Amino acid sequence: MALLMAIGIIAFIAAAVVVSLRKVAAESALQAQERRKREAHFAAEAGLAEARELTRVLREEGNTNFNKVIEKLSKQYNGQAPANGYVQGEPGLPSGPPNGNVFPWYEAIPWTPYTLAAASSGTAVDSDVTTAFLEMNGAAGRRILDFPAQERVLYRVFLVDDNDTDDRTVDSNNRVWLVSVGEVRGRDGTQPQRVIIRALITSGAVPGGACSTEDTNGAANNGEC
Image (cartoon, helix red, strand yellow):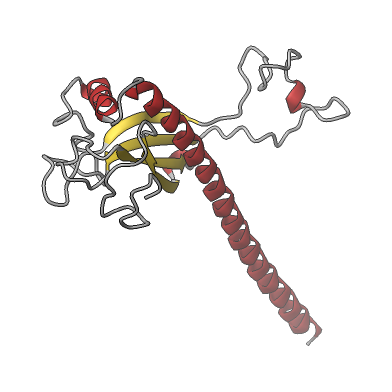
């Protein structure tokens, strides 16, 4: 009887340990997924900020629309004119001639790493700090082992003309969409975590243009559609 009771107690404790481990593993996976989601969001925000500055530079001073930007992005992507210079043949993205619900997505920024890792030469992350690896060391001078390197965090940004009166290869109301994709890729080809954010931007060269049907505030024509 004592032996049977001991075996029963051991079996109960083993089952309790297995359940606890599974619960801890599930909680850890949820926490890791949430952390990767935040990293992807910050990467998408960084890509969006970079793309806004890029469009400002490519637009060139004096232009009130984004046609120059579309043209330059088209040639940069595959050397084609805007009518054929958009991203094609990629799963999940529009492909084919602009008609109906299919419209061109122009690549503003290709996949770009968003990392905090220090250079192999030992230079600090912050260019203002000249001491090598200083930011990766704690107050006692010891290396911070859990420094967030973010080795598999990337972003990619697209430019899409809003739904104005043209075929979306020509900007006629001084407004375009920037769509930024932040991605954290898992190890060994595991499923990535992605966050997509977008912003409707205006050239700022003129006080507004005709609002499209996609503008969130409807028919306001004061530059704040």
